[in-house]
Length: 542
Image (cartoon, rainbow, N blue to C red; front, side):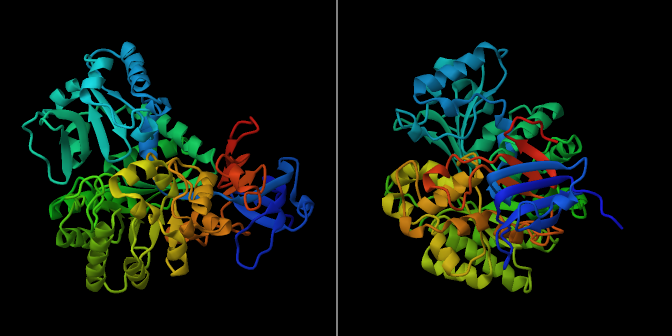
């Protein structure tokens, strides 16, 4: 019986299938959301075309699988779509000017929030703005300046609404910053952020869907086809579902529900009860992966064995007692979910490995990938060996190092920053390693990440070039390795007949082009499940 024609046929200079034993191909055909055939000659699949087949003939281009970003924050990116774009500012006066412009069109009393993907060391003053300076932009509005996932700065109006005064005690696992004279600077770190963020009004559903539509398209425009969102509030699962039903998601989503707000057994059980309806969903576009916790802080609060370079008596913060976190993780995995835990400093990673080893003793036989290290930034040799022995996968994010290097050097010193993300060693020692961005701290983008992992370039120059990896290895961390982490390698991560048609078309071959071209390289097409979700040729996505 004749087969129906392909929906899509791409002819290119090379199709990198990333399938073991499969050499480069020149043509790939798609029907019904899956790959139906590949051929080593560009005209080798012409027989599967028909009147409705879209034929893309790009003789100088290259095809690769679509990339996964295995640690990012799509929800935060969607929020930022409508926030004040302070990432464009280069000085504090410019920064304040952008907030002042927004205040001029915002009714008094309404919150003003900024984008999060910026670093203070990119400003001429190389510091965060203060509450006093934010007051110069507006005193009629509460202002929340957000930088990354671990820092907020409030103006005086917002501090008053949050009930924060010079006498407010430090919350467990957080910092309310004060200057040398004990006055509030407006800065809140880690757990202290909740004092203000709980007051933020939530956008209506249409606004949330619109934000996800814009943000997911932007991910797709960089070659990303799947995101592992590593801190989704449980109530936002329904927002993701609504976006999916509205056709607004341009990328597949694997959600890690945030466990940052739960500390008690009852709280964890309540969170898991709310996740239960998602256990048996079988939607290839939207799935719940598990729960996310954090063992330590970030750039300014990662837990170290040796003191900080800029604070000789400071070792960072552990956010959990190890026994309590082990009990929390155990409650999650015994309900059949997986767990990813943020660990940034070497003390944080060592403590997390203690926790995971405790859980594995209690639950022998847990499938590999049930317990994951998120970041594992400063991973010492003995810690890497232990993680490999325990079979614990690791997600790494060079874009985070790229953007945060200068701030991290100031906090930790150059030697420790050089050793962040020892990719060469992780791979050589046998770890299951995958790659992402950690947006909003680092920029998302398929080739931006590949460029960083192969050059070790940062805003502070190349750091730890001995830890660099090859281009093919970097691509694998975003494709085949990522699909293995998610348990989806039978369906994704390579290009073979029967696999999902998640692929990207590049104007030049990312595997061979000059390395300096990689950082800004963007795909011509991104296709997810046979659906074109990005087309730089100006044609509407279908």
